Length: 84
Image (tube, rainbow, N blue to C red; front, top):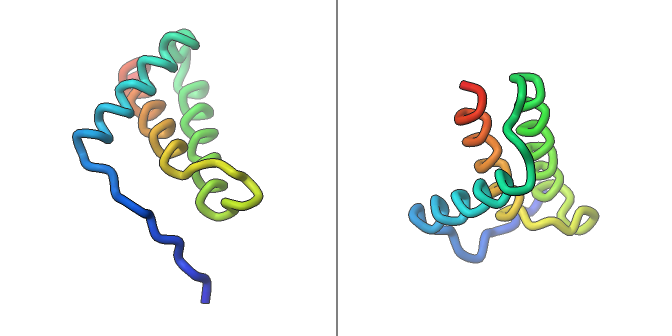
């Protein structure tokens, strides 16, 4: 059976909203608005793949699942704001 990696400390809800908001603002400063549903979906899927990779292959990937989850949440919000 595969060993489950435990998170050292869970993030509080208010902290999560704050860091996702900061990541959203950073991304908006770097990139223009999403132009189509297809573009938005590809951005969200890319972030999901990066999170999956960070969770399943942490040694090979060297990405932090928390950071990837924050980026995924920010892009999902951006998808809603830009396209829906």
